[in-house]
Amino acid sequence: MKCVICKMGEMAEGKATITFDRDGVTLVIKDVPAQVCMNCGEEYVDEKVAKDLLSTAERMAAGGAQVDIRRYTPGSVAPC
Image (cartoon, rainbow, N blue to C red; front, side, top):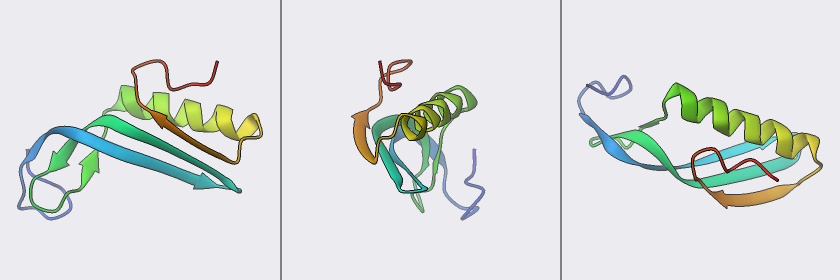
């Protein structure tokens, strides 16, 4: 698959660091599985991973956290 940003690079399995920053809350999740463009470095996560990440970010914001850094493990980035 070609990258939709640079239109030149091929996508390959890789890892991404995803950062959410909203309303004074910063959440960083490392080692997120993603498709990464070999030319420009653009990163794409699949729908299941994106839903997991967004759910986690919402819970962190609702829980009052200001800064949190986690390593991605499927289904377990959400706080206990």
